[in-house]
Image 1 (tube, one colour):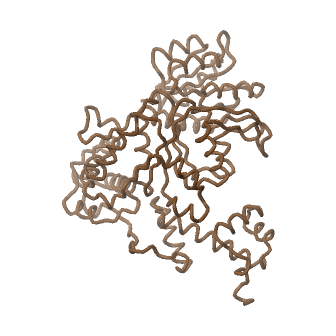
Image 2 (tube, one colour):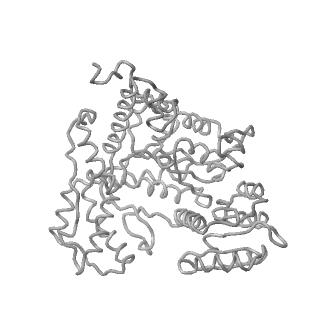
Image 3 (cartoon, one colour):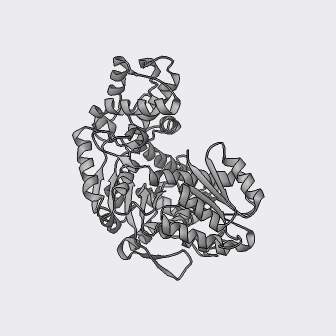
Length: 480
């Protein structure tokens, strides 16, 4: 069970937070900075939630000492409305985040969950040895005895001790984040922070602020200064997942960080120097993106110092029995089950399947089967597998398929969380079709089309350029 330390001189705050968390976590409390440091040194909590203004040593002083003892410590700062700038300064000294008093309970719960999830990533070592080490049942593992996976294990061992930038390539669900964490845990920066950022999960308009931070007034809604992930990760390792989804403007700024190890916050003049190790990942074809001018060639060469391709599960089916065994052990612990294994017919069904969602999909299918299983063995009919697409030798031109068929297939893939590159290409196809129809309806008037789509005119122009939509194709069928 993870441990949380609550530090506040107000008894009511300590009591309320403890009541909120004590069912899920081991909760410690302290009423001042000195008590907090004693508790920290004695119990090494996974998360500290601390007020700034306290009698004696204030929160920033305690934060500095905690971070000097353990740079990976996660501290959430609580502050009243009048001391927002002080809280932001605390971010400079390594606070995970801050929250304003009085705070909504759901917001605090979300912040706690996010912090503890990151704590697990930084503290739980990823094993990739062929022979399971002692105590391996309690840690995540990269499973694979196939020759392709053995080559990846060799690469991890070779690149981990250096600070070289690593580019991980592979389909969704192949385990790129696990590989990144294995590199981190075997690196010289293992005692420093590890921060993952999913570039596809954050809108373009917010990603720059998330990475580089911003100054007050830098854009609409920037009501105060914000410290970005790069600055927070000083001395550590940052993992940029889905780098292929990053906008060209953000790519340009990232290129500068890689070249000069410095940047400015949005709207700021101060140059901030950083010492960070970069690990990046993508499921996109970056070479194709370069040819389509969606990815910078100079950034590609900066990132592609060491490239590791993670094979799809269908390319290493000999690893499936080992993966099944690993997930059965894992979920027997989590679900408190005593399932011995799967029947030969069920194993044959799993082995013959195409696995478009790769290892992640296999994990989900087995977990669902174990929930349904009432005996000691998983049966063939308990493995609920979706029908996979036929994979042609040459990639099909999705733009020529009926739109209704594309939408149906895409919805099925998204609903079960296994959308592959082909599925993501469908999203682009649907978006292009919507833009075309909006432009045709407005007879090529970009301002009206943008309003119809709920985006601004510049965004529309960018998408027209991306999808190669020319003015001459904007005449509707009825007018032609």
